[in-house]
Amino acid sequence: MKKIEAIIRHEKLQEVQDVLDECGVSGLTVTEVKGCGAQRGYTESYRGTKVNISLRPRLKIEAVVRAEIVDKVVDKIAEAARTGEVGDGKIFVIDIEQAVRIRTGERGPETIQHAERSMWGH
Ligand SMILES: Nc1ncnc2c1ncn2[C@@H]1O[C@H](COP(=O)(O)OP(=O)(O)OP(=O)(O)O)[C@@H](O)[C@H]1O
Ligand SMILES: [Mg+2]
Image (cartoon, rainbow, N blue to C red; front, side, top):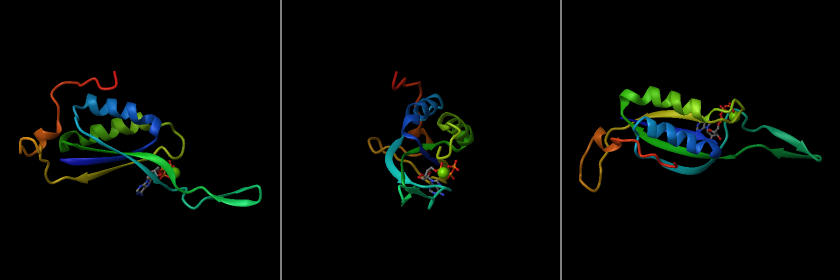
């Protein structure tokens, strides 16, 4: 299992959720975050005062998926979250050792997938 951690623009959430749904990924965690990328520390003068363009609000999407589909899901998220402008975000992939469904005690990759499209947001 792998965890996909994607930092995206707020307005791209629905499209990214749709991708995850298409790929059979049933669970995700969304967190409001602030961050910066390559343009960190960039300063601009505004009416004689230097303004630091530093931490921008973004959403962090965390989704644990089966290792076999991680490359496909990452490609689809990148496609869905792209505007082509700087600040589109980043995607990280992390190894996950175990997943447990608390209600039943089930363990493993079966706990992170759903059988049918859930049609969320539709
Ligand atoms: N190395 C990193 N580690 C953790 N988070 C990062 C990293 N790089 C970017 N982020 C997160 O992703 C958000 C968007 O990054 P951003 O898209 O600006 O990356 P970039 O490398 O500057 O690419 P671009 O040049 O297209 O802007 C940041 O606000 C930050 O939250
Ligand atoms: Mg940037």
